[in-house]
Length: 151
Image 1 (cartoon, rainbow, N blue to C red):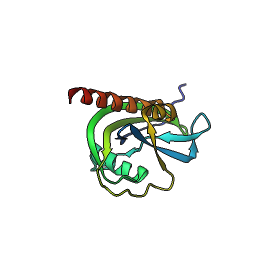
Image 2: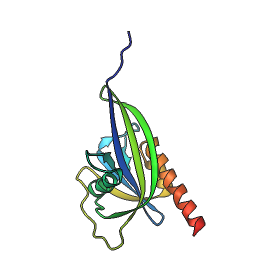
Image 3: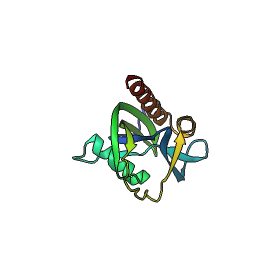
């Protein structure tokens, strides 16, 4: 007999926010990663009914990182992420966008469970808790490098 976990499927969107040589991450002091340190993540969340991927990504960056005004620079694509959580198999379709803070926009307030931190590319890749999010940072870096060669 096969003991299968219930499967939960949903779509999420988020942003790799870059300002020069800095990448924005959010630290979740109340949630520990597998290494026993607080989670370091990229801002992202569920796509709500009637909301586009872009709208979700902007909303999540505003809520989690306190940046209510960001510009989408490029679509970084999709990837499926699968993992087990609380006795369930999660299948998440993630979409991410390369973003930049809007010039002159006043900062907002991050949700209380998140601490926004600006890191170098290398620091972000080293400190992000999950491999899937490191992949988004790599894609953003590759996109920026490709754009700088064409200008």
